[in-house]
Length: 323
Ligand code: FUB
Image (tube, rainbow, N blue to C red; front, side, top):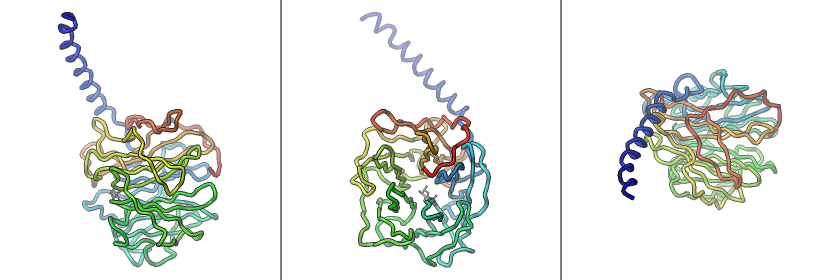
């Protein structure tokens, strides 16, 4: 007992030294972002043998960006700028700025691009994932003020039976099944709920028959911004929040890690999470950069904590597949 009392302070000093060494190592070794410059809210998807990223363009206080870009990659590491795919002042009649947090979905050979613009949600359509996208409605799909909270951050999940569901909202999570045309829905069927800690940036995927709803907690300008999740047997819930949360958060020099999306490598049970963090160095909630890390599950299907210092290893060529 006496010996224990004597060595305990030494052990504590050594542990604390080791932990600060780890933190210094973290700050020295933060992986590079995957896109050059400041891009946030990355929505990642795989179509055929190619991965795509659809981000928000950052760099202005109040997120005043007016256009959206698209990026493509075959290996998750090298990203090609496919250019501007939607320019609000040019392509929309109803919104000019605050081009935020897009999402993509494909159905019946068309690509549907959902986006926030001046705190409304819009949809644009193209024959290709890289656009050009056209606004078929000439008005928002979800108009500002339609429900409580901000009408931003759309996500569309398409189930195995082809049914498409729109998830969106800051403050609350709203869900509605889209009509076959992908550009309309029955507003009387909207489900509104708020998982504990929910702020914004919902994302849904399915694995082994289970539906995963993920979202961001705290404000994107807060270094504690992070991602949590819940699961359900149905795409519309009820969702039960997992015991082990958040699954993505900053560490060391990585701050404000959140507003994510998830992609499965076609043909493999291999998953990656795209997210933004404060730019390193000197970033903040208006200067964020896009990163990708592996995302894994335990044998019960729980999402394991993501290591924000881990990046995708160089991928073997992805086989073209629809899933
Ligand atoms: O990028 C603008 C806004 O910041 C998004 O809509 C939110 O989710 C937050 O990331």
